[in-house]
Length: 105
Image (cartoon, rainbow, N blue to C red):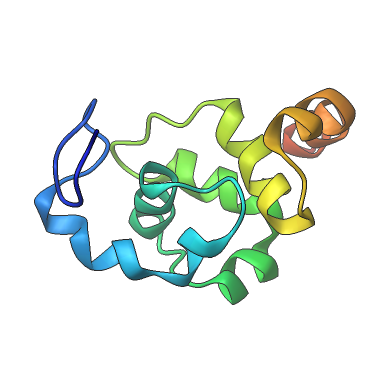
């Protein structure tokens, strides 16, 4: 079991414990590692996440330094915003999200 502020797979550091009470943690499917990535990208509130949307938020995380975000984060962000489990999002929305993620030529 991991305790608040302990390190597990490089996800949580002692310097990020102030994030652990953040409102983003209340969203379904977002854990401490996801919230830490969002904070690193400058996304600190649910309103900021909703305003950006899942695809733009994922892009910001990927563009931020030290990002190791997988597509599962994209699915988790969409699920958090729509109230769906990330696996359901992956199954039903992956094609749409990936098309949105493609750069416009």
